[in-house]
Image (cartoon, rainbow, N blue to C red):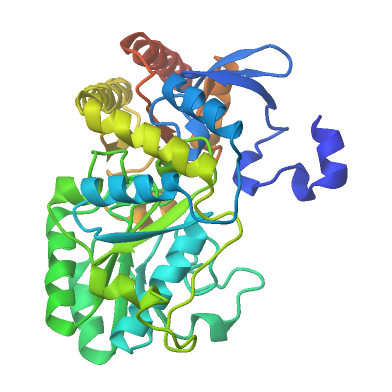
Length: 421
C-alpha cells in the first residue's frame, strides 16, 4: 500500500508526521481505543487522531447523531440550526468566549486570530514562543523546531517580519520585548504540544495576562489540543487565566470532522460583523466553503453536550494520566536510565533527556533520538501506536482502561530491561 501511495502522494502520506520507517501502518477500522490495520493486526491507539478522539474512536452518541443528520444533508453552504447550537454551547462552556466563528482547521483559526488582534489594536507585531505549533500559516510557522531562526522552505522573511519569537516559559524575555516593540498580540499554547507536551508555568500565563492588560496587547491561547481535553472549559479554566481570543479545534468537531474555531470578547469578535461594519475594508474577513457545515457542528454539539453532562470523564483521565506518567518515570529510574515524563491530564510526553524538560529547548535539543526511535519501534512491535517516531507523545481517551495502562507499563519495563543488557 505504501508503494502505491508513493506514486500519487508526495512521501506516500498526507501529513509527514504520519510516516515512520520503513513504512506506516494503514488503518482499516477503529473503535474505542483500538485500531486495526489492513493486515488485520490490532493495536492499542495512543495516537488517537492527533488527539481529537477524547472519547475514543467511533463514539456511539456522535456516530448516531451524524447518521441522522446525513439524511438531511451534510453541507448546505447556508446558515442552519446546528451552527447556532454549537456556538451557544462553546460560549457557555469556555470562560473567555462570548462569540465564536468556525473554520476548517486550526491553521485557519490561528491566522484569523492574528488578523483580528492586529485590526483591534492597530499594531503589527505578534509574539510567539519557540517550539509552539500554530499550524502552517506563514507568519506563525517559524521557530517550531531547532534551529529556531531558520525559516522553513517556502516561508519568506517578509512573511515573518512582524513575528517575534521568544523562549517558552520565560516571562522575563517577554517583559523585555514589550518595552522595545509595539505588540499587537501574544499567542501561546498553554501546553506546548508538538514541543514536548510541556505545561506552561502558572505564573508564566498569569504574567502574560498582566503584560497584555498593561500594554493593550491581545492575549491568544491556542487551545487546539487542550480545548475540551483538559476540562470542559479547557486549559484556561484549570490555570484560571482568561485570554482575549481562544483557538479551538480537534474535539470541537466531535473528533470526527475537520474543524477549527476562534472566539473571544464581543468587542473584538464584532470586527467580523458585516452588520456593524458594512465597509468591506473596515471589516475583518473570515469565511470558508465548508465552515460550520452541519455534519461537523452536529457532531461537535453532541460531543460537547456529553462532556457537559459527564464531567467525571476529566477526573478519570487525570487519574489515568498520572498513573501513566508516574509508572513510566519510575520504571526508567529503577533501571538508572535518564528518562522523564511531561504532560497534564490526558496529555503525555516521554523524553530521554538528562533533566525533566520545563522548556521546549531541553525536549528538542537534549533528547536521545536513538532511544526515542527504539522505543517507538518496540511499542509498535507490541501492538501499541504512539505519536511519533521522533518525539513520543501520547493521548489518552475515555476508552482507555487501567488494563491498557498496566499493559503499556509492562511493555516499557521490557524495553528498559533490554536497554540495560
